[in-house]
Amino acid sequence: ISENLDDPIKNKLLDFKEKFKKVTKENNVSEYFDIDKKFHFYLLEASQNSYLEHINNTFNILLLSYTKGFRTKLKESLSYHIKIIDEIINRHPKNAAAIIIEHLEAVKKYF
Image 1 (spheres, one colour):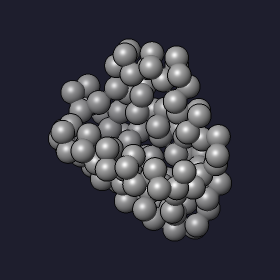
Image 2 (cartoon, rainbow, N blue to C red):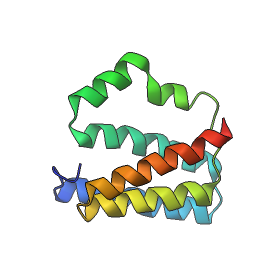
Image 3 (cartoon, helix red, strand yellow):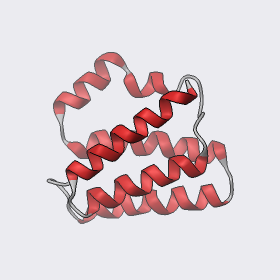
Image 4 (tube, helix red, strand yellow):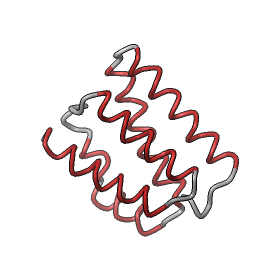
């Protein structure tokens, strides 16, 4: 995404960031869950990586990850999402990837 970053992508990521903050402050788990799904699907789309999209479509990875509902603590999830968005916008793909891996590892404890 960092390589393809343009104003529409940047603005969409910033919009996600603000929505995440707002619903976390309101402690609105169901709305956060909705935004979280949209965010992850948007990351796939914005990556313009047909291989990632193929893997997701073949194995329904994102859909399956949501079958048990939202299980992460809001503030923990928010922290990771803000860091990921910031690293993408600052064009630091390796940092963003490292945070994504850290986020995935942290989420495993909830399943």
